[in-house]
Image 1 (cartoon, rainbow, N blue to C red):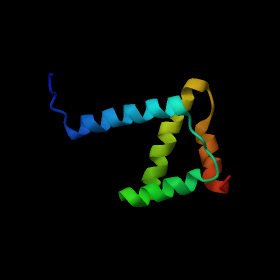
Image 2: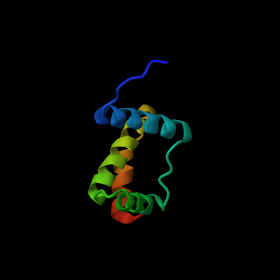
Image 3: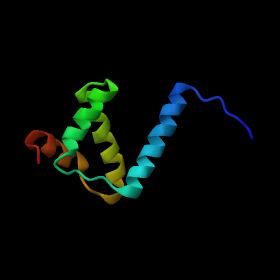
Image 4: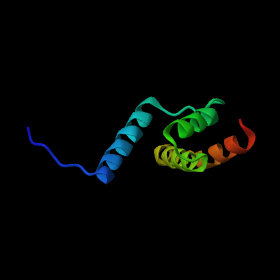
Length: 83
């Protein structure tokens, strides 16, 4: 078996591709608990809430771009109103 030396940047790229593929298959539910889940995960992994929101928004937009839905507007509305 051939082994590849993978640096941290490439690991991040691969992880991002895996995550997007899983979300495409399983779908994304922007339910009422979504905002709180993002907040908890950000706290747990030690990143800022703003960074977590930006990351989540970018993933939703990339995935929803294929179905021509405006996910950014949905997320902006969700963060402003909590619904």
